View 1: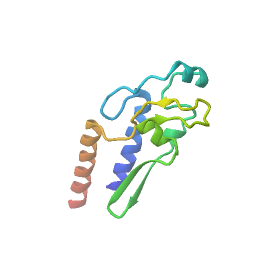
View 2: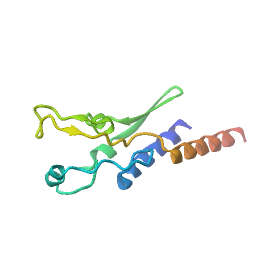
View 3: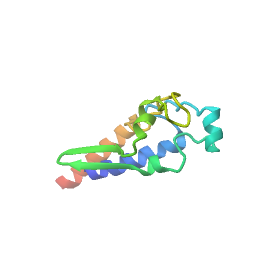
Length: 122
């Protein structure tokens, strides 16, 4: 069941790439004109696809841990300030929550668990 939930979370989180919305449906903060110029496009949280390709989960006992191992994932999720030594020093980066459980996710995960239990009990 945890593996099915982990697979679902990867798919659901990757789907946020196209909708550019947080799990609660809030649109992500638009990119600054400087960022759009530097990247050459206006797709949020997307440069080379590394962030969404790095989504993974780990199952330990009865625990499912889900997220990204990319160092910058936390900055994207929670926001912060660029390093003083970065290309754009000391600039604010808004939070663009991409990891989390939406109401739809909650319903789908419940359905996955119900089906799993039904299959196991029959």
